[in-house]
Image 1 (tube, rainbow, N blue to C red):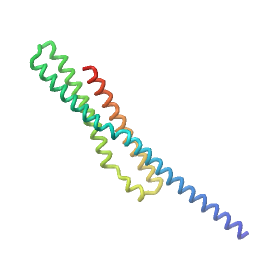
Image 2 (image 1 turned 180 degrees about the horizontal axis):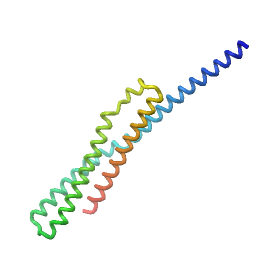
Image 3 (image 1 turned 90 degrees about the vertical axis):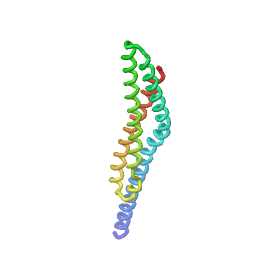
Image 4 (image 1 turned 90 degrees about the horizontal axis):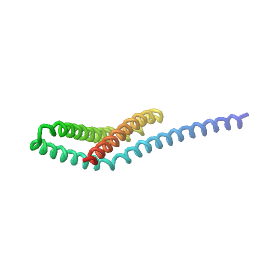
Length: 150
């Protein structure tokens, strides 16, 4: 009977350790998912700055044309300028979201949290960085399409 009790306790201990290990693996996997999204977005930041500069030049060009143009062409120029300004703002917002996420992400706290708390924190971080990814990709795509038409 004593050997049976020791065997049961040993099995329970082993299964609880396995559960801890799998939770730890889940935390690490989730953190890796968060950083995979970050690592996909980060190289695009330079392209965003380049597009902002191109939009700024385009806006300056429109302003020059408007100053020397006719009244009938002014409306179209104003519409183009407004769209370029909106696209530039979208790029700036996406850039700010990325910078804010990076400054607020605190991976050091993961070690201080329980596995469940760490997974909750990482889930929220994954949602935030996914939102950043969506806004970065959309703003780049829209600005590229706009500038490609010009």
